[in-house]
Amino acid sequence: MEKRIGVVGIVIENIENASKVNDILHSFGNIIVGRMGLPYKEKNMSVISLIVDGTSDEISAMTGKLGKIQGVNVKSAITKK
Image (cartoon, rainbow, N blue to C red; front, side, top):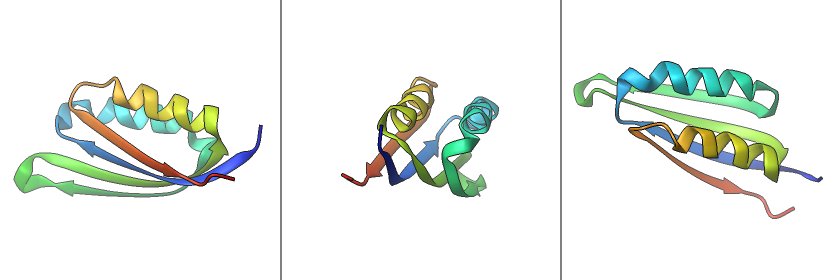
């Protein structure tokens, strides 16, 4: 399967689940090219942006697992080729 480059945005509204997010990101570290995380302490939330390089299946598996965590919202934009 062909690799694609993309951007994944993650908003963690329930900061107590941040460790679950980090565990998943660690397990998909092979497709993460870059990561920027910003804690928004005034709102008790965190925002993470990722640059990824992987197959559609790998990226979908990661975003799917992240999206199942309560209080976590995930959106992605992936290249077509």
